[in-house]
Length: 107
Ligand code: HEC
Image (cartoon, rainbow, N blue to C red; front, side):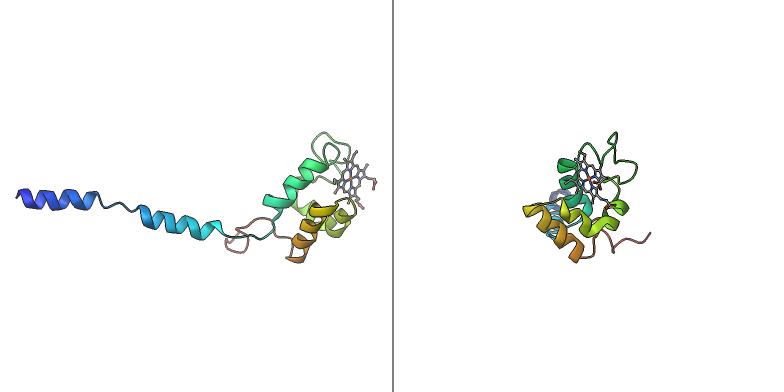
């Protein structure tokens, strides 16, 4: 009887940690340029206050909205230089994805 208890206890302590970790590795690697992760922070940093809430261009061209930025597309490149301009081009070339999960989830 004590043996059964010992076996049951040792089974309890076999932790499922390894499978958890493997899953995390898998979802981590994905270096696609997306609006949410890359473009939005660039705009937020460089184009405030005018194109954000309270700014004079917020009504016409709000940059916190994916659709605005996607539709302006290459026009944004005239005001983004260097690395930021390169990231913008990369983003447009990969089809202006909104977020990483796009294409995987159904609306
Ligand atoms: C000081 C305020 C201000 C800042 C900062 C600003 N903009 Fe603008 N933006 C404007 C105004 C005003 C207009 C409308 C007049 C014009 O076209 O210049 C405009 C227009 C634009 C247009 C033209 C839209 C069209 O219909 O052709 C683009 C593209 C644009 N901005 C991109 C940017 C980007 C990208 C940044 C950040 C790197 C930025 N702007 C930062 C004020 C600003």
